[in-house]
Image (cartoon, rainbow, N blue to C red):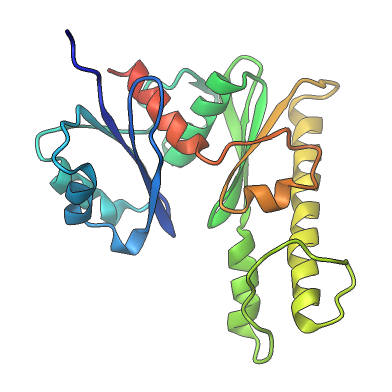
Length: 249
């Protein structure tokens, strides 16, 4: 009897790293660690002597790649990038400049939801990635992340407090906290709504079958009142790594 394939999926972003064990068909419950705390020792402890057939990694923090290499030792590592089979093509002037996490999202949305599609990823930055009806990555948008915007206000002003983001009660704040909350959440929804509308008008004029999926830390909060977003998939990037692994192994 052949042993099942086991992958270690690693999504290294600027603020946090997500990890999950996975088979060819599903991922286990993911874990999250601050990226500045990611070490080879932590990774070795995470796998707990399990036999890993392949490390599957998308990284936007190059200095952490050596930690993965050290933990993997002789185990094969699949570094996600434009050279890897993704199940989607790339129609983009400089493929090497596309973030690996964005390619993972494109692979996942095409496989799990179909195309054409837009992925909105609420991370340190909010990114919009577009997959054409022909299942090709064609580009996207990068805007400041929600937490980055609110932290900027806190860090650059003497009197404004640090926010724990939640749904505002009203667009008109009756306190400094309420005013900041309304500006952050309602304002951010406006940004997302406008960008989705412009992307659809430019890339898919007249089409009403564009799949729009959100992922990332604030996806649930922002997507809650946005009918333009049809689904929230919290682990879409990891699913993209799993899908890439199955295609390339």
